[in-house]
Image (cartoon, rainbow, N blue to C red; front, side, top):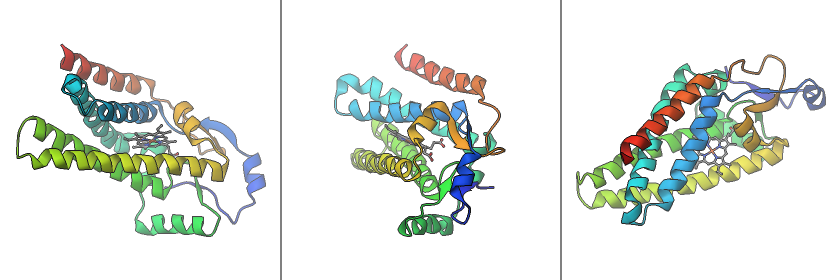
Length: 219
Ligand code: HEM
C-alpha cells in the first residue's frame, strides 16, 4: 500500500512532532541509484572519443546490469523499493500534480507518483539506450542506430535534469532533504513507517557484480 504521509486534512504540526529519523531506503536501492547516476555521467563523458570506448561500453553495461537488478529488487525488495508500493496509474499522477497546483503538494514517504513515473521512464530509456548502443557497436542494423542511440542519450539527459530539478523543488516544498535521504537511507517518519533492514549483503553482491563486470571488460 502506498504511504502518503501528510494528508492535508491532518494537523501537520502534531504529525511532525511524532516523527523520528528512520530507515526508508535500503542499501541496495541506494547503491543502485548512485551507481546508475555515476555510470550515466561516465558514459556521457566518454561518448565522444574512441580512446575512451572501453570505458563507455563498461559504463553502458553497468547501467544495464543495474536496471536488471532494480527490476528484480522492485518485486522482492524492501517496502519502499517495491514497484507495488510506488507505481500508481495516471489518476495518481494527475492527483499529485493537482495537489501542486493547489499549493498543497502531497507528501509521500517513498517515491511520489510523478517520481515513480520518471523512474519507469528512466529505466525504460536506459534499456533502450544500452540496446541501441550495443547494436551499433556490434554493427547490427545500419547507421541510423547510432543516431537513435544519441537521441535516446539526449532524451535521458533531459529527463535526468528534470528529475534533479524535481528533487530540489520537492525537497524545498516539504523542507526535507531528499538527496541526503538517498545517501543515508533515512527520513523523518512516523512510527511503523520505517523499514527494518538495510540488506547490506545484497548491496555488497551488487557492488561485486559491478566490479566483476569491470574486471571482465578490462582483463
Ligand atoms: C546529482 C544527480 C542526482 C541526484 C541529486 C538525484 C537524486 C535522487 C533522489 C533524491 C531520489 C529519491 C527521490 C525520492 O525521494 O522519491 C532519486 C531517485 C532516483 N533517481 Fe536520481 N538523482 C541524480 C541523478 C540520477 C541519474 C543520473 C539517474 C539516471 C540516469 C537517476 C535515476 C534515479 C532513479 C531510477 C531513482 C529511483 C531510485 C530507486 O527507487 O531505485 N538519478 N534520485
